[in-house]
Length: 447
Length: 53
Image 1 (cartoon, each protein chain N blue to C red):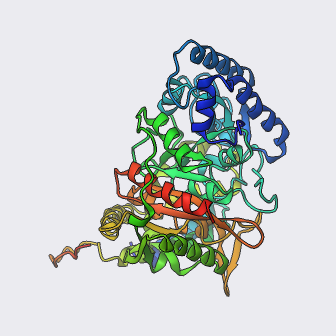
Image 2 (tube, each protein chain N blue to C red):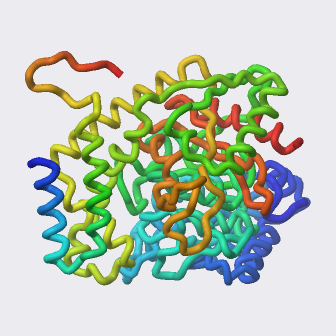
Image 3 (tube, chains in turn brown, red):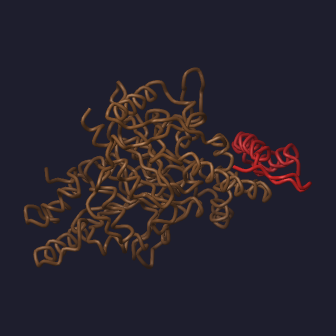
């Protein structure tokens, strides 16, 4: 296997040994973009530039100037990230006419690592949604099942990786926007520790909650792309020994409302880990149920402050649902915002405490399978719940607290829809979390 | 501002701005803020000791 679906380490070896060229790999991605145009994953494709960059990569590698494992690897970007001389649309008509002056630092880093940028991906408008259905460029479709949401807001990024349009993609995550579409499309999505990857040059949704990270096919690919984004070299992946893993299930709010089929797959995944020696125990995040209230008290305010000027001048330029969320932020009182900031600090301590003695928290990435396209509510048991709050339910807490979190596939529903495990690690120890995820991935792939 | 007064003012403003679809969102936000105001981490100006997380 040497196409865009192969692991980056394998592609990198092929490129280094001359068995594969970046030009051929990039051409395969561009062909996939054309073949799957109906999925609406891309807003702008950099065909000529990408092929030119690929040829330069091939020449440099042949001349012994290989920069590392990302050299010659095609990567896509969520169209929230600046590329010099190009528009950053944020999926919105509001940004019409924009052109970025310089590359965002995360793009500069990836270019320094030799990555080939194939284009910019579609997203939920201004990253303000979980389905990628509200975009000025039309909705993104899930390649696994066109009747289901691709997840969001980095929906185009996930679809680009799932279909071989790119080997990896750069996404952003303010409440789950890397992890949700990765889970909906059966991929790996990594939200690093807050601040670990620069968010400069990235259109903000909520600056104190925004994270930048990779969407990939494997955990090792996520590690390699994170290295590229940060300029670090983490060395070969060393999966943690499954028999030495100590995982904690956060009982209560985060596991109370889960679709029965998802719960069964999640339980089976933990059982498989337990059978190989992992210790899985219960832990508590006592105030987790207050996470959405705290989140709203911060995220609404920050998003609205950023958009206030355009919201007043051109409210009609926003999609209706995004406009309403922005309008809502205008009503939050300062005293409640301060309460939310105190709650953020409180929740961070609670998650730190819940992790004590454990390598990671383990919980479903999504409490439901990817929801039907256009659905505002779905039923769990006998309850009808808003899709948006369900899709954020398991993820947004860790944007508040800044802990690194990664999702990876751990099974499927009877209908073949992906189910994903979310692992949450200690702040500042993303590499350790990746090692835990790699150990779990090895077990799940052998089932 | 009490929560009830805040909610009533917000809904009145939304309707005055011809944004009736905002009303259910304001009602949901009011429930979230009610929970936020009841949270254990809120300080007490009477000097009562703060609880620890």
